[in-house]
Image 1 (cartoon, rainbow, N blue to C red):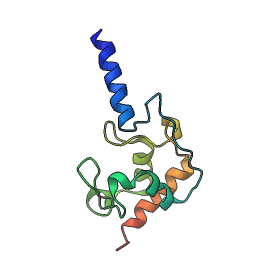
Image 2: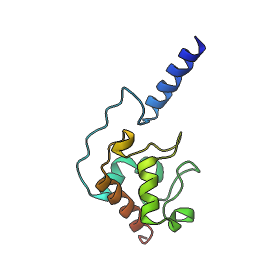
Image 3: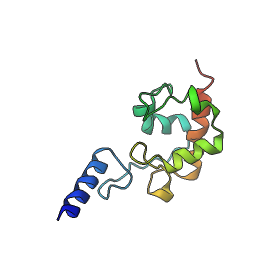
Length: 116
């Protein structure tokens, strides 16, 4: 009984925060490969309009550790997410992004490093 209640609670919480694993969530189709557009539609709420970040759970993308990440490392973070904090965006992990879209977002994140 408790397992069932706990499972329902976790699914409910996952749905409430927009987790990719929510069985009731339908992702809005995003067909663009424009990194800025994808970032604005999915990342801006946590990481800020200019990548300034918000909390430890949504770190800045223009300073700190994020500035040392390679394109491949950023792609992996976008694709795989971070359990309990950031959903996985790869279609292979039930997310909305293709590999080309993940690369576009990663390239946009790198471009934020040089924007004032």
